[in-house]
Length: 135
Image 1 (cartoon, rainbow, N blue to C red):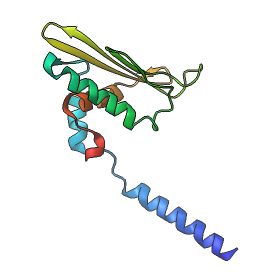
Image 2: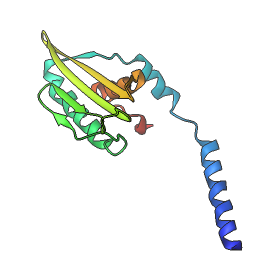
Image 3: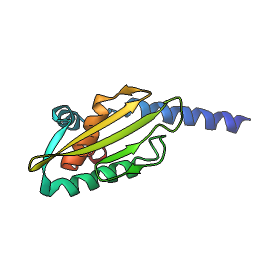
């Protein structure tokens, strides 16, 4: 019994230390995210690279998003809500032609509420390849 209490106290202590030392996302990343345009335009030659980054973003974070299966076609990527109550996250990426450019828009909903910062996070990764996990 004494050992169980010691283990519980150690686990609680480690959890508190980790929580107190976590400084959140770096200021440099937050500045880039705030300046990111969503929707954004890229030259048609870069569209395939940007689109592949979108697919990569969704595949890398699939376990973090409790959504359904990835729905993919030429101009849309969607991870729908995983249930009929529309709880959790849903992501939609769209790509449309705009002259010699392509316009890309990223949407991230959490329980039917549009998350502006989530969309900018995806747009920043797609356009520049920068992730908050790089910092």
